[in-house]
Image 1: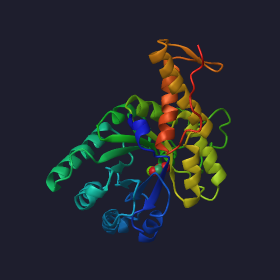
Image 2: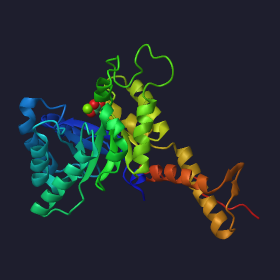
Image 3: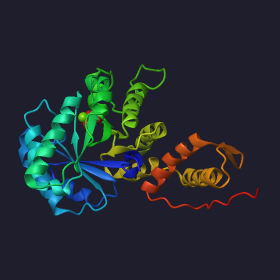
Length: 318
Ligand code: GLV
Ligand code: MG
């Protein structure tokens, strides 16, 4: 199965790594993935202490079934290398991925790949198991996104960072995720989102949408998530328990679409293997190999999200 459909990341919870109370709360939330943050949710004075909190939280466990990640500081800071070394040396066995923020060139991903390999060898961890998630958060990162996406076999996702991105291009608004006032033609984010999505899909990575900061407005979160889900994004960051169910729902195919996709797969397999035909009708719908590929995506996302079929395929009489 491709990376795009193998592990669900519909909801990715941001957890400030310096706050043990938030870390404890996070354990009870039904998210697909979480990241313990060492970057922008942690004050400079707390950066070093946060590494201890994060490593201890990973080792204490209680994260069953969820993808466990840590966001380190970006490579323009003095903190990144020690973030990686401390967390992976102490808790690498209980860590699935590192999130590298503000990636602006492929060399930064390669640096992290090499450092991870060294640490894995030094402390006896399986080589190559810990993945990398690259945040695309500024103009330089977006311009280099194709090379970034191809920089390492450890890469699992590209993550859009809307807040930093909007600041980086001087967008004239303070409301993250909403259209800038005055721009009344089209979607101001369409190019950015599609650019990231293309680079992700061309390299078999997941594409993850970033945060929506108005945490009390769940309907607005749902609208924002719905737009990227419709384009093909795999999930979105969540900042608050109220956003979790909405994300899980929005990035899961509907039961009807899931059933339909499984029917297409069955009907097409029956057509090609039993009847030796490359095009076939399912009800009023003409199916061919391209229909199968579209159905595979929806079926893959549905299976990964734990959906069960409610409609069985019965071949039509000749
Ligand atoms: C996330 O990191 C963002 O900048 O939106
Ligand atoms: Mg950011």
